[in-house]
Image (tube, rainbow, N blue to C red; front, top):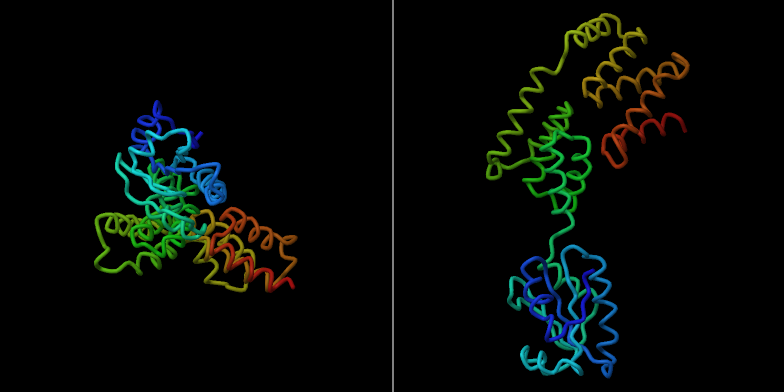
Length: 282
């Protein structure tokens, strides 16, 4: 629960003590004030939206005169924002919902910050598949912050998606190439050096010796996918499908759709090849 009615008895606990854990928004209100009645559901909506990071503390000025005097309230509606035991912001009078949101967001964690924290936990557990969509979304929502790009590049590298990792890390400017960037680059270089297994190299040689051999092309694509070279695999499978839609009873098309599904909804590579396959089909 993150909405409380504040009294003189619980004010220390619900306002001051809680403000060291999360933002406390204090609304001074009266049933006699239409503006207060209009504002209350707006603040309650924000409280429901930011359950873990905001507490709405409501003070009825008609019943809590001592608190009104302590806070120096002179008019209604009045809203105060308390953080670490001190007022940090607020407003008096009527405000529109967008303006209130803008004010709150100065003190509330961004949604992408929670995604990055969760992704970092997944990275620490080497659970790259779970970290990937979180970092991809956080990068977009944070307006391409470099440190998130580095984490995403590291994630791609760990998943053997070398080409995507390389493209992403290449965009990181010199000023942002910190220790995390150097770590990501080191992982990328190791993955590049170990990119091709003996089996993959053998299949690659067989395919290059006879590019028209669909069996060789299909076997190479399957091995590429197993070793994390999803883009190369998709491109080769698409080529096989173009040349013979009925090859191996439609196995290339099934392999393409399976890879797309495994990459996950919203993955740029999945979206790109879903479109390519759709174009071929229709």
